Length: 477
Image (cartoon, rainbow, N blue to C red; front, side):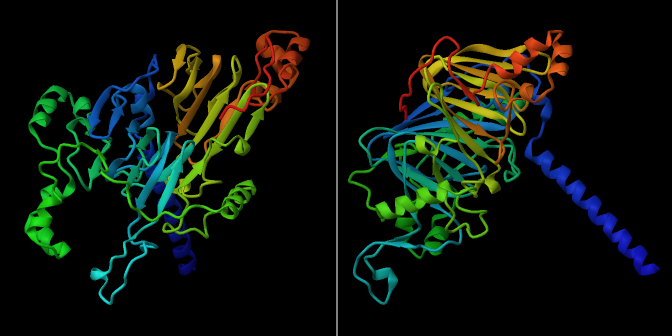
């Protein structure tokens, strides 16, 4: 009798603990929900811009209500030819969309082996070997989405003939960030510009002006700048002169530096057989698997959403949608993020919809068009034109519709859930289609015939051709 009572007590305690833990974790994931109570949303251009030796960095205003609502920060790096974005890590998980160009990407995952090595003369003492050993270096190209966990150091290098443009979303409200709502970049080299530092906390505390004056008097350095050079020399087993060089004290090149000669790294070219094998993995339901066979050391970190063959939804008269989530890139399950690329042909329309379980942060990559976003009071919080380079957020459950202009409309949406779902208002798989005719007739005070037209006049899914005319298929990449 006593053991039974004890078992019941332990069982109740475990249930209560799990429920409380789930609530705490959910609270950590999206804090300060009242920040999503606003009347207007704006399509935004970058608020801060600063130049480095070999590129430009732009940051959207993280204090804008839509970014505070979603708990994210958006940054764009433009890296010139032979430009190197210096190694750094951040306090948040992030998704990086390669908007233009090609290059190398290195991600240094703690505890993983140096599996790439160059050819050279070996010796018994590795310190005397001319070989270079490092972790995997990945080739990236336009349309790739790169996923990085919090605290993982990474770098980019442009080995192409055109600028390499990276659009980054940093998820400051993610449970992996245990600091505050500021995004923090910890550089391993160089002297980062003051403008790169987050201004969210000082703005929220009402100390923005005073903090700005104080920051202008401070020097921002890489993380080695705060260590004693003798301790660094001892830690790396080098002389103090070399340890002093690691601090980059007189380096004014910024965070994107020019490589004098072509960067020498080990990165094997992918064979046709390997490319075909990867495409075959992508065609399988659920992508490459459920992630159980992957470890952090060999996990895939990128997925291309620019290839029309990988489209999840395709309409030859309207456009296509391509999604990357935890089903085809398993590491996103740990980051709780996903992304979707949309392409609308001229004058085409995306079905009015709402995001069920995520905020959607939309970056316009090409073209222009009209977007409407409607809140719970039935009022439009945004109704206007958007163009290339702007960012706009559709908060969770806010209904939105996109219509392309005469040159078409393309975008990438970052979503704050690893398996974000939408509910459509019109079309073949819509909410309206699933409601009985008589319910619609009474709800809208219309005839059953009109209700039938509402349900059945659109047979397309997700992306709709213009009601005025049909446009022939064009292979827009």
